[in-house]
Image 1 (cartoon, rainbow, N blue to C red):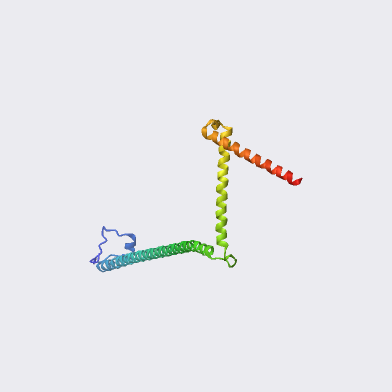
Image 2: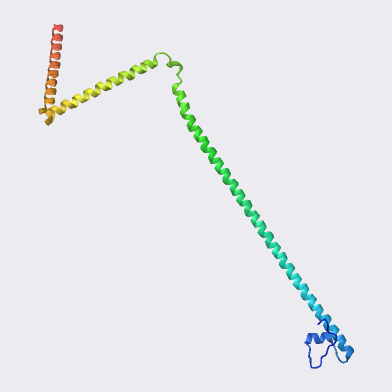
Length: 201
């Protein structure tokens, strides 16, 4: 098209738009001018198409840059969120560790405090209180042992007198001993009554 120098319209009908641009082509001069006009018109169309294509490419490049910028901003925001969450998780773990450590120290400190309070004597508890406490505990143990023995004897006597075990040799001896003790207690009571009666006279 750039080499177009002559426009031959004989048996070559043009597009109505191009025919309007070219004008008349009745002689050589008009046909050359028509060729120049058509060439200029086509160049103008080509230039406009090139400009449109450039504008489209520019818009696409700007859109791509915008998408990339948005992607980078989104990734930066996600990194910031992850960083903040990690910092919050680290802080939460540190607080839990400090709380557990403080609770452990409090638990370890409490028995020591109780031990110190137990060992520390009061101002009014000096002197013979520890021996008295020891004597009381000893006498209490003796009383408990005696009561336990009496309970065992009573249970054995009841078993030997009220069950089928009374025919056993051990139970026979125990029943005899029980009867002797009862008789001795009755005689002792009778003697006391007699002495009391004589003293009243």
